[in-house]
Image 1 (cartoon, rainbow, N blue to C red):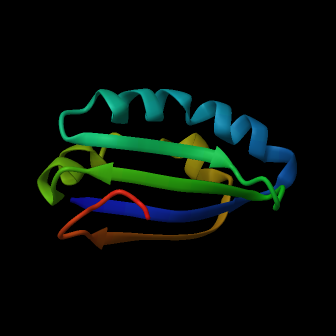
Image 2 (cartoon, helix red, strand yellow):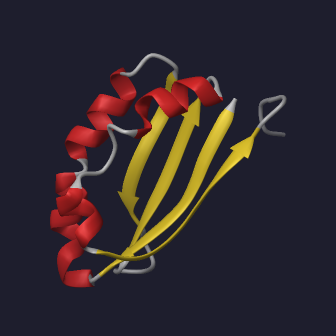
Amino acid sequence: MIIVAGHLIVDPADRGAFLAGCEEVVRRARATEGCLDFSIAADVVQDDRGDVFERWVSQAALRAFRGSGLGPEQTAVIRAASVLEHDVWGERPPG
């Protein structure tokens, strides 16, 4: 399994429109074969931050989707980003 996690920084005045513009990307990702979860959401503490979380069954599934992600309208307002891919070899319920 592949987990993609991190955050994006946008101008606080642009965050609402940025997130609304990501709705179709989230829908497309979730409908993509091999996507287990996909979310871009407003951070509850920082008004300039959007949190990213994705789970994919494989690197191949992630790569197949990757060209269908954010468009130029969304990427134009991103001032900074820290998003990394993580390989996960096992999973278990918390506790």
